[in-house]
Amino acid sequence: MLGAADIRRLAAELDLRPTKKLGQNFVIDPNTIRRIVAAAQLNRADTVVEIGPGLGSLTLGILEVVDKLVAVEVDPKLASILPRTLDPFLSGKTFELVEADALRVTELPLPPTALVANLPYNISVPVLLHFLQTFPTIERALVMVQAEVAHRLAAKPGGKEYGSPSVKLEWFGTARLAGNIGRSVFWPVPGVDSALVYFERGESREGRKEVFEVIDAAFAQRRKTLRQALAGWAGSAQQAEEILLRAGISPSARGEELGIAEFIRVASSK
Image 1 (cartoon, one colour):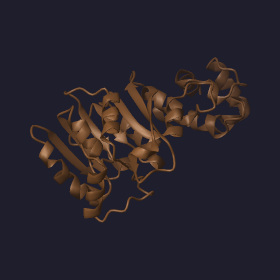
Image 2 (cartoon, rainbow, N blue to C red):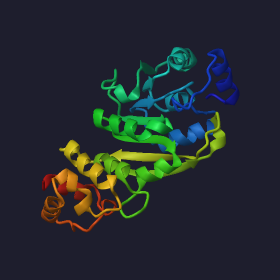
Image 3 (tube, rainbow, N blue to C red):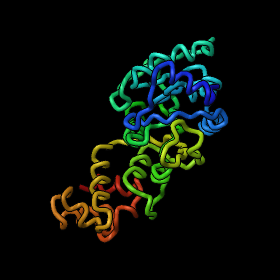
């Protein structure tokens, strides 16, 4: 397990200056790594995909409990040193490194059953949704994200934190908060708090594109009633009202009141 001194030494070797653009805040506390791995509920048979392994601190924690891991890293400097850092710990393990932008990854050398990642704050939601859509073999996920984003992902209908990310994640399964992470365990120290979100995949669904269009329209103008918010999507406010009534939903309701089942009904009633 890597500590603060190890992280700084590796960064110095690479002449690495962590950038906000790539969301590079490295966990330097081994106990926090153990917390994250425990919260992921992994088992030895899992094949894990880690997004943004960085200098390898979380990677090493994952490899303590699983035998197969695929890491996706966009930074060439970090990708160059990661195999050397991990090499002493890879006996009997399978490790694959994919050097790519996570948002553009469409295939992996091994089919993952779990996703574990300290996700860059600026692209955390798109990356998570992309991987769940692209790799249906992912059964579970544990992601560390900005605390505000974590609460949105795990939010339920009716609250102010509930929005497009909440419903879109619900399309794939169920999510819950799995703990808070303090700023002091990172280097460099971020300007925001972090939290963990645990996800379990649910039933397979059809028609994602159409349903997500409804979700986007509903929350683009979340203060408006669905009759008004869905007018552009439906063709007019009157047509939106007719679709909503066919779906058994009040035209005066707002998007924040609907769960994924209701959004599916709206999309299929058009």
